[in-house]
Length: 503
Image (tube, rainbow, N blue to C red; front, side):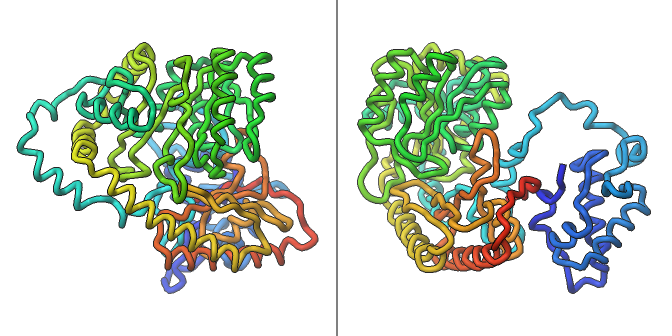
Protein backbone atom coordinates (compact mmCIF):
# COMPACT_ATOMS: atom_id res chain seq x y z
CA UNK A 1 0.00 0.00 0.00
CA UNK A 2 1.28 3.47 -0.89
CA UNK A 3 0.58 6.21 1.64
CA UNK A 4 0.76 9.05 -0.87
CA UNK A 5 -3.04 9.00 -1.03
CA UNK A 6 -3.18 9.81 2.69
CA UNK A 7 -0.69 12.67 2.52
CA UNK A 8 -1.67 14.62 -0.61
CA UNK A 9 -3.27 17.83 0.58
CA UNK A 10 -1.47 17.75 3.95
CA UNK A 11 0.29 21.06 4.50
CA UNK A 12 3.41 21.99 6.44
CA UNK A 13 3.55 25.21 8.44
CA UNK A 14 6.64 26.98 7.13
CA UNK A 15 6.19 29.76 9.71
CA UNK A 16 6.31 27.32 12.63
CA UNK A 17 9.39 26.94 14.81
CA UNK A 18 8.91 23.18 14.54
CA UNK A 19 11.29 21.75 11.91
CA UNK A 20 9.69 20.53 8.68
CA UNK A 21 11.10 17.01 9.08
CA UNK A 22 9.42 16.74 12.48
CA UNK A 23 6.09 17.97 11.08
CA UNK A 24 6.25 15.25 8.42
CA UNK A 25 7.16 12.62 11.02
CA UNK A 26 4.22 13.65 13.21
CA UNK A 27 1.80 13.41 10.27
CA UNK A 28 2.92 9.87 9.44
CA UNK A 29 3.06 8.84 13.12
CA UNK A 30 -0.54 9.95 13.54
CA UNK A 31 -1.62 7.67 10.67
CA UNK A 32 0.26 4.77 12.27
CA UNK A 33 -1.24 5.35 15.73
CA UNK A 34 -4.73 5.44 14.21
CA UNK A 35 -4.05 2.18 12.37
CA UNK A 36 -4.68 3.91 9.05
CA UNK A 37 -1.25 2.61 8.08
CA UNK A 38 -1.17 -1.01 9.29
CA UNK A 39 2.02 -2.84 10.18
CA UNK A 40 4.04 -3.93 7.19
CA UNK A 41 2.94 -1.00 5.01
CA UNK A 42 5.69 0.11 2.65
CA UNK A 43 6.24 3.87 2.81
CA UNK A 44 7.23 6.04 -0.17
CA UNK A 45 10.91 6.40 -1.07
CA UNK A 46 12.62 9.49 0.37
CA UNK A 47 12.60 11.22 -3.02
CA UNK A 48 8.84 10.69 -3.45
CA UNK A 49 8.14 11.81 0.12
CA UNK A 50 10.16 14.96 -0.58
CA UNK A 51 8.08 15.63 -3.73
CA UNK A 52 4.79 15.18 -1.84
CA UNK A 53 5.71 17.89 0.69
CA UNK A 54 7.92 19.98 -1.65
CA UNK A 55 10.93 19.68 0.66
CA UNK A 56 14.51 18.55 0.20
CA UNK A 57 15.43 14.89 0.19
CA UNK A 58 17.47 15.52 3.35
CA UNK A 59 14.31 16.67 5.14
CA UNK A 60 12.51 13.50 4.06
CA UNK A 61 15.39 11.32 5.26
CA UNK A 62 15.40 13.07 8.64
CA UNK A 63 11.64 12.47 8.96
CA UNK A 64 12.13 8.73 8.45
CA UNK A 65 15.04 8.69 10.90
CA UNK A 66 12.83 10.31 13.53
CA UNK A 67 10.11 7.71 13.00
CA UNK A 68 12.72 4.95 13.18
CA UNK A 69 13.99 6.33 16.50
CA UNK A 70 10.42 6.12 17.81
CA UNK A 71 10.25 2.47 16.77
CA UNK A 72 7.38 3.19 14.35
CA UNK A 73 9.19 2.23 11.15
CA UNK A 74 12.15 0.14 10.05
CA UNK A 75 14.33 0.27 6.97
CA UNK A 76 15.44 -2.67 4.85
CA UNK A 77 18.47 -1.85 2.76
CA UNK A 78 17.70 -2.09 -0.93
CA UNK A 79 13.96 -2.51 -0.29
CA UNK A 80 12.58 0.55 1.49
CA UNK A 81 10.97 1.82 4.69
CA UNK A 82 8.13 -0.08 6.36
CA UNK A 83 5.70 0.44 9.25
CA UNK A 84 6.89 -1.66 12.20
CA UNK A 85 5.25 -5.05 12.74
CA UNK A 86 2.33 -5.47 15.11
CA UNK A 87 4.52 -7.07 17.77
CA UNK A 88 6.58 -3.89 17.90
CA UNK A 89 3.49 -1.68 18.19
CA UNK A 90 1.67 -3.34 21.10
CA UNK A 91 1.99 -0.20 23.17
CA UNK A 92 0.09 1.81 20.56
CA UNK A 93 -3.28 0.19 21.24
CA UNK A 94 -4.61 -1.90 24.07
CA UNK A 95 -7.03 -3.63 21.69
CA UNK A 96 -5.75 -4.96 18.32
CA UNK A 97 -8.75 -3.60 16.45
CA UNK A 98 -7.65 -4.47 12.90
CA UNK A 99 -7.37 -8.11 13.91
CA UNK A 100 -11.01 -8.11 15.01
CA UNK A 101 -12.47 -6.64 11.83
CA UNK A 102 -14.30 -8.83 9.35
CA UNK A 103 -12.93 -9.06 5.83
CA UNK A 104 -13.74 -6.18 3.52
CA UNK A 105 -13.01 -5.49 -0.14
CA UNK A 106 -9.42 -4.33 -0.62
CA UNK A 107 -9.41 -1.95 -3.55
CA UNK A 108 -8.34 1.64 -4.27
CA UNK A 109 -11.96 2.83 -4.23
CA UNK A 110 -12.49 1.77 -0.62
CA UNK A 111 -12.70 5.27 0.90
CA UNK A 112 -13.48 7.24 -2.26
CA UNK A 113 -16.99 8.44 -1.34
CA UNK A 114 -15.92 9.37 2.18
CA UNK A 115 -12.96 11.30 0.78
CA UNK A 116 -15.17 13.13 -1.72
CA UNK A 117 -17.47 14.57 0.95
CA UNK A 118 -14.59 15.45 3.31
CA UNK A 119 -13.65 19.10 3.79
CA UNK A 120 -10.78 19.95 1.41
CA UNK A 121 -7.50 21.34 2.69
CA UNK A 122 -7.55 25.12 3.38
CA UNK A 123 -7.10 27.09 0.19
CA UNK A 124 -7.93 24.15 -2.07
CA UNK A 125 -10.64 24.55 -4.69
CA UNK A 126 -12.38 21.20 -4.92
CA UNK A 127 -14.01 20.40 -8.25
CA UNK A 128 -14.25 16.78 -7.11
CA UNK A 129 -17.38 16.24 -5.04
CA UNK A 130 -20.73 16.35 -6.84
CA UNK A 131 -22.60 18.65 -4.49
CA UNK A 132 -25.06 21.50 -4.75
CA UNK A 133 -23.89 24.93 -3.64
CA UNK A 134 -24.85 25.55 0.02
CA UNK A 135 -25.57 29.16 -0.93
CA UNK A 136 -28.51 27.87 -2.98
CA UNK A 137 -30.04 25.67 -0.29
CA UNK A 138 -33.64 26.90 0.23
CA UNK A 139 -33.04 27.62 3.91
CA UNK A 140 -35.49 30.52 4.12
CA UNK A 141 -38.29 28.41 2.66
CA UNK A 142 -37.50 25.46 4.92
CA UNK A 143 -37.42 27.75 7.96
CA UNK A 144 -40.78 29.24 7.01
CA UNK A 145 -42.32 25.79 6.48
CA UNK A 146 -40.95 24.53 9.78
CA UNK A 147 -42.29 27.51 11.73
CA UNK A 148 -45.70 27.54 10.02
CA UNK A 149 -46.46 23.83 10.19
CA UNK A 150 -44.76 22.45 13.29
CA UNK A 151 -47.55 23.39 15.67
CA UNK A 152 -50.17 21.90 13.31
CA UNK A 153 -48.45 18.52 13.07
CA UNK A 154 -49.50 15.59 15.26
CA UNK A 155 -46.76 14.76 17.81
CA UNK A 156 -46.98 11.08 16.90
CA UNK A 157 -45.63 11.96 13.44
CA UNK A 158 -42.30 12.48 15.18
CA UNK A 159 -42.34 9.15 16.95
CA UNK A 160 -41.55 5.85 15.28
CA UNK A 161 -43.11 5.51 11.84
CA UNK A 162 -43.38 2.63 9.36
CA UNK A 163 -40.09 1.43 7.91
CA UNK A 164 -41.50 2.10 4.43
CA UNK A 165 -41.47 5.81 5.30
CA UNK A 166 -43.61 8.75 6.39
CA UNK A 167 -46.96 8.07 4.71
CA UNK A 168 -47.67 11.67 3.59
CA UNK A 169 -44.22 11.82 1.96
CA UNK A 170 -44.75 8.53 0.14
CA UNK A 171 -48.01 9.92 -1.25
CA UNK A 172 -46.30 13.19 -2.23
CA UNK A 173 -43.47 11.35 -4.01
CA UNK A 174 -45.99 9.17 -5.83
CA UNK A 175 -47.83 12.28 -7.00
CA UNK A 176 -44.54 13.84 -8.14
CA UNK A 177 -43.66 10.71 -10.13
CA UNK A 178 -47.10 10.57 -11.74
CA UNK A 179 -46.43 14.10 -12.94
CA UNK A 180 -43.36 12.72 -14.73
CA UNK A 181 -45.34 9.97 -16.42
CA UNK A 182 -44.34 7.28 -13.89
CA UNK A 183 -47.45 5.50 -12.56
CA UNK A 184 -47.06 5.11 -8.79
CA UNK A 185 -48.97 5.01 -5.51
CA UNK A 186 -47.63 5.08 -1.96
CA UNK A 187 -47.41 1.26 -2.03
CA UNK A 188 -44.74 1.59 -4.72
CA UNK A 189 -42.53 3.91 -2.64
CA UNK A 190 -39.89 3.23 0.00
CA UNK A 191 -38.17 6.28 1.50
CA UNK A 192 -34.44 6.01 2.12
CA UNK A 193 -31.64 7.63 4.08
CA UNK A 194 -30.21 8.84 0.78
CA UNK A 195 -30.32 6.92 -2.50
CA UNK A 196 -26.99 5.29 -1.66
CA UNK A 197 -28.90 3.28 0.94
CA UNK A 198 -31.20 2.12 -1.84
CA UNK A 199 -28.26 0.64 -3.73
CA UNK A 200 -27.13 -1.13 -0.57
CA UNK A 201 -30.58 -2.53 0.13
CA UNK A 202 -30.96 -3.75 -3.44
CA UNK A 203 -27.61 -5.51 -3.24
CA UNK A 204 -28.68 -7.23 0.00
CA UNK A 205 -32.04 -8.32 -1.39
CA UNK A 206 -31.16 -9.23 -4.97
CA UNK A 207 -27.51 -10.28 -5.04
CA UNK A 208 -25.47 -13.18 -3.78
CA UNK A 209 -21.71 -13.62 -4.19
CA UNK A 210 -20.95 -14.66 -7.74
CA UNK A 211 -24.07 -13.12 -9.31
CA UNK A 212 -23.47 -11.05 -12.42
CA UNK A 213 -24.35 -7.35 -12.64
CA UNK A 214 -24.11 -5.22 -15.79
CA UNK A 215 -22.93 -1.63 -15.32
CA UNK A 216 -22.08 1.20 -17.65
CA UNK A 217 -18.41 2.08 -17.95
CA UNK A 218 -17.65 4.61 -16.63
CA UNK A 219 -20.29 4.90 -13.90
CA UNK A 220 -21.11 6.11 -10.37
CA UNK A 221 -18.42 5.24 -7.80
CA UNK A 222 -20.95 4.37 -5.09
CA UNK A 223 -22.69 1.78 -7.23
CA UNK A 224 -19.39 0.10 -8.09
CA UNK A 225 -18.49 -0.07 -4.41
CA UNK A 226 -21.84 -1.51 -3.32
CA UNK A 227 -22.07 -4.22 -5.96
CA UNK A 228 -18.44 -5.28 -5.61
CA UNK A 229 -18.83 -5.42 -1.82
CA UNK A 230 -21.79 -7.75 -2.34
CA UNK A 231 -19.48 -10.12 -4.19
CA UNK A 232 -21.07 -9.50 -7.59
CA UNK A 233 -19.18 -10.07 -10.82
CA UNK A 234 -19.40 -6.88 -12.83
CA UNK A 235 -19.84 -6.85 -16.61
CA UNK A 236 -18.91 -3.49 -18.15
CA UNK A 237 -21.04 -1.91 -20.85
CA UNK A 238 -19.25 1.02 -22.55
CA UNK A 239 -21.40 4.16 -22.65
CA UNK A 240 -19.12 6.70 -24.28
CA UNK A 241 -21.24 6.64 -27.44
CA UNK A 242 -24.32 4.67 -28.40
CA UNK A 243 -25.26 2.04 -25.85
CA UNK A 244 -24.35 -1.35 -27.27
CA UNK A 245 -27.57 -3.33 -26.98
CA UNK A 246 -25.90 -6.13 -28.96
CA UNK A 247 -23.24 -6.51 -26.29
CA UNK A 248 -25.88 -6.30 -23.57
CA UNK A 249 -27.89 -9.07 -25.19
CA UNK A 250 -24.74 -11.18 -25.42
CA UNK A 251 -24.25 -10.65 -21.67
CA UNK A 252 -27.87 -11.64 -21.04
CA UNK A 253 -27.57 -14.87 -23.00
CA UNK A 254 -24.13 -15.91 -21.75
CA UNK A 255 -24.22 -14.81 -18.10
CA UNK A 256 -27.87 -14.30 -17.07
CA UNK A 257 -27.07 -11.21 -14.95
CA UNK A 258 -29.33 -10.34 -12.03
CA UNK A 259 -29.66 -6.69 -12.99
CA UNK A 260 -28.50 -3.80 -15.14
CA UNK A 261 -27.55 -0.56 -13.37
CA UNK A 262 -27.85 2.60 -15.49
CA UNK A 263 -27.98 6.39 -15.15
CA UNK A 264 -29.76 7.26 -18.41
CA UNK A 265 -30.11 11.00 -17.80
CA UNK A 266 -27.02 13.22 -17.37
CA UNK A 267 -24.94 10.19 -16.56
CA UNK A 268 -22.35 10.38 -13.81
CA UNK A 269 -19.58 11.02 -14.76
CA UNK A 270 -19.94 11.43 -18.54
CA UNK A 271 -23.06 13.64 -18.61
CA UNK A 272 -24.48 11.47 -21.41
CA UNK A 273 -28.24 11.45 -22.08
CA UNK A 274 -29.64 8.21 -23.43
CA UNK A 275 -31.78 9.11 -26.50
CA UNK A 276 -35.50 8.36 -26.45
CA UNK A 277 -35.31 5.65 -29.10
CA UNK A 278 -32.44 3.96 -27.31
CA UNK A 279 -34.51 3.91 -24.12
CA UNK A 280 -37.39 2.25 -25.91
CA UNK A 281 -35.08 -0.33 -27.48
CA UNK A 282 -33.52 -1.06 -24.09
CA UNK A 283 -36.95 -1.64 -22.52
CA UNK A 284 -37.91 -4.01 -25.35
CA UNK A 285 -34.71 -6.00 -24.88
CA UNK A 286 -35.07 -6.09 -21.10
CA UNK A 287 -38.70 -7.20 -21.36
CA UNK A 288 -37.75 -10.04 -23.68
CA UNK A 289 -35.18 -11.33 -21.20
CA UNK A 290 -37.05 -10.30 -18.04
CA UNK A 291 -34.05 -8.23 -17.01
CA UNK A 292 -34.25 -6.09 -13.87
CA UNK A 293 -33.10 -2.52 -14.57
CA UNK A 294 -32.02 -0.26 -11.71
CA UNK A 295 -32.52 3.28 -13.03
CA UNK A 296 -30.63 5.82 -10.93
CA UNK A 297 -32.01 9.29 -11.60
CA UNK A 298 -30.49 12.02 -9.41
CA UNK A 299 -30.10 14.70 -12.09
CA UNK A 300 -33.05 14.70 -14.53
CA UNK A 301 -34.62 17.81 -12.92
CA UNK A 302 -31.41 19.74 -13.54
CA UNK A 303 -31.64 20.43 -17.27
CA UNK A 304 -30.29 23.64 -18.84
CA UNK A 305 -32.14 23.60 -22.13
CA UNK A 306 -34.70 21.13 -23.40
CA UNK A 307 -36.18 18.63 -20.97
CA UNK A 308 -34.65 15.15 -21.21
CA UNK A 309 -36.58 12.12 -22.52
CA UNK A 310 -38.95 10.25 -20.26
CA UNK A 311 -37.46 8.05 -17.57
CA UNK A 312 -37.06 4.34 -18.30
CA UNK A 313 -39.55 3.74 -15.51
CA UNK A 314 -42.16 5.73 -17.44
CA UNK A 315 -41.65 3.33 -20.36
CA UNK A 316 -41.67 0.21 -18.20
CA UNK A 317 -44.17 -2.21 -19.74
CA UNK A 318 -43.14 -5.32 -17.81
CA UNK A 319 -42.64 -4.14 -14.21
CA UNK A 320 -38.89 -4.70 -14.25
CA UNK A 321 -37.55 -1.17 -13.77
CA UNK A 322 -36.59 -0.09 -10.26
CA UNK A 323 -36.39 3.70 -9.98
CA UNK A 324 -34.00 5.46 -7.57
CA UNK A 325 -34.47 9.13 -6.75
CA UNK A 326 -33.00 11.61 -4.28
CA UNK A 327 -33.53 15.10 -2.92
CA UNK A 328 -29.80 15.56 -2.22
CA UNK A 329 -28.97 17.09 -5.61
CA UNK A 330 -32.00 19.35 -5.95
CA UNK A 331 -32.53 20.46 -2.32
CA UNK A 332 -29.70 19.72 0.09
CA UNK A 333 -27.74 16.55 0.86
CA UNK A 334 -27.96 16.94 4.63
CA UNK A 335 -31.62 15.93 4.55
CA UNK A 336 -30.46 12.41 3.59
CA UNK A 337 -33.79 11.64 1.93
CA UNK A 338 -34.07 9.47 -1.15
CA UNK A 339 -36.58 6.92 -2.40
CA UNK A 340 -37.13 3.77 -4.42
CA UNK A 341 -40.11 3.21 -6.69
CA UNK A 342 -40.89 -0.40 -7.54
CA UNK A 343 -43.51 -3.15 -7.30
CA UNK A 344 -45.06 -3.61 -3.81
CA UNK A 345 -43.56 -7.10 -3.43
CA UNK A 346 -40.08 -5.60 -3.80
CA UNK A 347 -40.85 -2.62 -1.56
CA UNK A 348 -42.02 -4.96 1.21
CA UNK A 349 -38.87 -7.08 0.95
CA UNK A 350 -36.62 -4.01 0.97
CA UNK A 351 -38.44 -2.69 4.04
CA UNK A 352 -37.73 -5.94 5.87
CA UNK A 353 -34.04 -5.45 5.13
CA UNK A 354 -34.07 -1.74 5.96
CA UNK A 355 -35.47 -2.31 9.46
CA UNK A 356 -32.19 -3.97 10.45
CA UNK A 357 -30.23 -0.86 9.44
CA UNK A 358 -32.13 2.14 10.80
CA UNK A 359 -35.72 1.00 11.48
CA UNK A 360 -36.87 4.02 9.45
CA UNK A 361 -35.32 7.12 7.92
CA UNK A 362 -35.32 10.42 9.81
CA UNK A 363 -38.97 11.37 9.98
CA UNK A 364 -38.41 15.05 10.82
CA UNK A 365 -36.51 15.38 7.53
CA UNK A 366 -39.24 13.38 5.77
CA UNK A 367 -41.90 15.66 7.26
CA UNK A 368 -40.01 18.77 6.09
CA UNK A 369 -39.64 17.45 2.53
CA UNK A 370 -43.36 16.62 2.56
CA UNK A 371 -44.20 20.23 3.42
CA UNK A 372 -41.86 21.45 0.67
CA UNK A 373 -43.59 19.27 -1.93
CA UNK A 374 -47.17 19.78 -0.76
CA UNK A 375 -46.79 23.55 -0.55
CA UNK A 376 -45.62 23.63 -4.16
CA UNK A 377 -42.17 25.00 -3.39
CA UNK A 378 -40.17 22.60 -5.56
CA UNK A 379 -40.90 24.07 -9.05
CA UNK A 380 -39.77 27.56 -8.06
CA UNK A 381 -36.64 26.26 -6.38
CA UNK A 382 -35.75 24.20 -9.44
CA UNK A 383 -36.17 27.23 -11.67
CA UNK A 384 -33.70 29.13 -9.48
CA UNK A 385 -31.03 26.46 -9.37
CA UNK A 386 -31.34 25.66 -13.09
CA UNK A 387 -30.80 29.30 -13.94
CA UNK A 388 -27.77 29.60 -11.65
CA UNK A 389 -26.18 26.29 -12.61
CA UNK A 390 -26.60 27.07 -16.31
CA UNK A 391 -24.59 30.28 -15.81
CA UNK A 392 -21.89 28.35 -13.98
CA UNK A 393 -21.79 25.66 -16.65
CA UNK A 394 -21.41 28.27 -19.36
CA UNK A 395 -18.73 30.10 -17.38
CA UNK A 396 -16.69 26.94 -16.92
CA UNK A 397 -17.15 25.93 -20.57
CA UNK A 398 -15.84 29.29 -21.79
CA UNK A 399 -12.91 29.19 -19.37
CA UNK A 400 -11.96 25.64 -20.36
CA UNK A 401 -12.20 26.59 -24.04
CA UNK A 402 -10.01 29.64 -23.55
CA UNK A 403 -7.39 28.24 -21.18
CA UNK A 404 -7.30 24.45 -21.61
CA UNK A 405 -8.38 23.68 -25.16
CA UNK A 406 -4.87 22.67 -26.25
CA UNK A 407 -4.55 20.13 -23.43
CA UNK A 408 -8.02 18.59 -23.03
CA UNK A 409 -11.15 17.60 -24.91
CA UNK A 410 -14.54 18.03 -23.26
CA UNK A 411 -18.23 18.20 -24.04
CA UNK A 412 -20.63 20.75 -22.58
CA UNK A 413 -23.26 18.84 -20.54
CA UNK A 414 -26.93 19.47 -21.20
CA UNK A 415 -27.72 19.04 -17.51
CA UNK A 416 -26.47 17.61 -14.25
CA UNK A 417 -23.30 18.58 -12.38
CA UNK A 418 -20.24 17.59 -14.38
CA UNK A 419 -17.78 18.14 -17.20
CA UNK A 420 -16.09 14.95 -18.42
CA UNK A 421 -12.64 15.81 -19.75
CA UNK A 422 -9.91 13.89 -21.55
CA UNK A 423 -6.21 14.71 -21.80
CA UNK A 424 -4.88 15.23 -25.31
CA UNK A 425 -1.24 15.01 -24.34
CA UNK A 426 0.86 12.24 -22.80
CA UNK A 427 0.36 11.26 -19.18
CA UNK A 428 -2.60 10.13 -17.08
CA UNK A 429 -5.24 11.86 -14.99
CA UNK A 430 -3.55 10.42 -11.88
CA UNK A 431 -0.35 12.27 -12.72
CA UNK A 432 -2.37 15.38 -13.33
CA UNK A 433 -4.05 15.04 -9.93
CA UNK A 434 -0.70 14.73 -8.17
CA UNK A 435 0.50 17.95 -9.77
CA UNK A 436 -2.88 19.63 -9.15
CA UNK A 437 -2.53 19.13 -5.39
CA UNK A 438 0.50 21.44 -5.47
CA UNK A 439 -1.67 24.12 -7.11
CA UNK A 440 -4.50 23.51 -4.61
CA UNK A 441 -7.04 22.22 -7.10
CA UNK A 442 -8.71 18.80 -7.05
CA UNK A 443 -10.94 16.66 -9.29
CA UNK A 444 -11.77 12.97 -9.69
CA UNK A 445 -9.54 10.87 -11.99
CA UNK A 446 -11.39 8.79 -14.53
CA UNK A 447 -10.18 5.44 -13.25
CA UNK A 448 -12.32 5.95 -10.15
CA UNK A 449 -15.40 5.42 -12.31
CA UNK A 450 -14.22 2.18 -13.86
CA UNK A 451 -15.13 -1.23 -12.44
CA UNK A 452 -11.48 -2.23 -12.76
CA UNK A 453 -9.40 0.92 -12.13
CA UNK A 454 -6.72 1.39 -14.76
CA UNK A 455 -4.67 4.45 -15.66
CA UNK A 456 -6.49 6.65 -18.14
CA UNK A 457 -6.63 10.18 -19.46
CA UNK A 458 -10.15 11.15 -18.37
CA UNK A 459 -11.27 13.10 -15.31
CA UNK A 460 -14.44 14.67 -13.89
CA UNK A 461 -14.90 18.23 -12.67
CA UNK A 462 -18.02 19.62 -10.98
CA UNK A 463 -19.37 23.09 -11.82
CA UNK A 464 -22.23 23.44 -9.32
CA UNK A 465 -20.54 23.70 -5.92
CA UNK A 466 -18.82 27.08 -6.38
CA UNK A 467 -19.80 30.48 -7.72
CA UNK A 468 -18.48 31.79 -11.02
CA UNK A 469 -15.54 33.66 -9.49
CA UNK A 470 -14.24 30.54 -7.74
CA UNK A 471 -14.85 28.42 -10.85
CA UNK A 472 -12.73 30.79 -12.94
CA UNK A 473 -9.92 30.61 -10.42
CA UNK A 474 -10.27 26.82 -10.37
CA UNK A 475 -9.95 26.56 -14.15
CA UNK A 476 -6.92 28.87 -14.07
CA UNK A 477 -5.25 26.55 -11.55
CA UNK A 478 -6.20 23.56 -13.68
CA UNK A 479 -4.71 25.24 -16.77
CA UNK A 480 -1.49 25.94 -14.88
CA UNK A 481 -1.35 22.30 -13.79
CA UNK A 482 -1.96 21.05 -17.33
CA UNK A 483 0.92 23.18 -18.61
CA UNK A 484 3.24 21.88 -15.90
CA UNK A 485 2.33 18.24 -16.54
CA UNK A 486 2.69 18.63 -20.31
CA UNK A 487 6.23 19.92 -19.85
CA UNK A 488 7.14 17.12 -17.44
CA UNK A 489 5.62 14.40 -19.59
CA UNK A 490 7.32 15.31 -22.85
CA UNK A 491 8.96 12.16 -24.06
CA UNK A 492 7.70 10.14 -21.08
CA UNK A 493 4.27 8.54 -21.36
CA UNK A 494 4.87 5.61 -19.02
CA UNK A 495 1.79 4.93 -16.85
CA UNK A 496 1.98 5.52 -13.11
CA UNK A 497 -0.44 3.26 -11.23
CA UNK A 498 1.08 3.51 -7.78
CA UNK A 499 -0.70 6.50 -6.30
CA UNK A 500 -4.31 6.99 -5.28
CA UNK A 501 -4.54 10.46 -3.72
CA UNK A 502 -7.27 11.64 -1.40
CA UNK A 503 -9.56 13.97 -3.33
